[in-house]
Length: 557
Image (tube, helix red, strand yellow):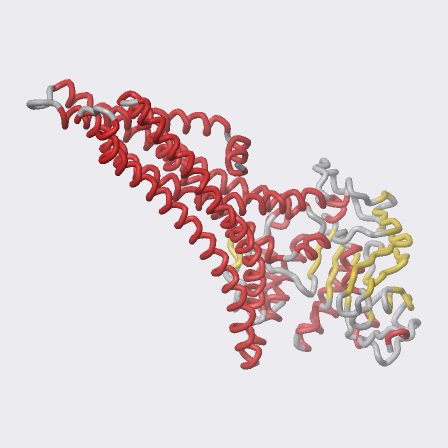
């Protein structure tokens, strides 16, 4: 069983302790059955020894059961945290391009639904183990009463187990199909949260999204989950029916076949009825374990996928050295574009960046500016060519150290609510100064590196992201269309105050922009068209056509 291998791998000691506690609980239950039967068939009042034995066995059952549950409770919560941390660690180590191809919904389902299913299964293990031990103890007691009758019951149990397995086999397929449907459902949930404005503005799209996308994906999950549960319920009730058949045979057929004492017959009936509850619990747990196995298999497959693409080589961090130059030598990058049904090729790119230099990168939509920025920042490894920092080759071994040289605000940035790392030192005072300059001090305050709120307008959030980048104080700053949704006042502050200030602090600055009125402030302006550099120089020396921002490749006109 996948879940059992997982438990043994994560904590073999826990499995041993839980098994021992469950066996002791089963032994106590078997003793309780014997004592109850003895008390029922004993003439006169029960003796003190019987009462004390009953109390001791009852207390032992409670304590061993509690021990198993407490042990598994701690383990399940620790396992949940560990699984999530392992997945997050692997996600952080995977190259950005592979994560983009894998998709956010698949990651979110693994981090939420799959982990929850596994947690529920681990919490059910004590109940499963105790029920199994009770059945085992009951079988020992029944064997003591009459071995032939026990063998007949074992034969029925084998028939029940085989028929149960056959009945639930198709249920596993339905559980897998339901889990696949959850990926699609989470993809629609993401569309709901990120596209809520568009859905509110378009009644027909909103109705189609609800009726066709969400409803159909939810219906698939409902259909397969219901089909799986139906099979588990039918199989469970079939086994309960077999149990009742066994009781009927013991009660009505056994006395006709052999001379059975009333005490033995009573013992068999009591024990069999007593064991029906644990059997139902045991069979009911199998549905939970089946779901957990499907989820665990998905998590392990995702973990293997992430590990296969990991660019985290656990190399020791090297001391930060003074930034002197960054060179791109024949760098290329390519990726598949679904809309054009072809591969977009960026490069070969030959560029050099130095401290104290302000560079503007311009070009039409789809020309590859953002992809080039991610290659420069080390988020996309180059398919060909070399990147050299201070003359040293950047490769898989030191790429993460290389990325620490950059402070960025991409067009699809994410705004965290606190400042971390070296930027935290003295950050509050510096942040308050920038909050005032960016006209955010009436909206946001900062204490111990934590912002009071990030619930701001798009333009305000982008200004707060700019503030965070400034506080990081790294040698290379990269801004991707930062000013695109700012009003004229803050555009002017950005281009005439903040960027020159970074340049004066000897930072290398690369700005992706369409604001040609500010080109004169750049040391260099680089034009990119369809993945290739078509112009480089000062704003005055570099000709830019009037259709800057359109960027249509001649072959696609």
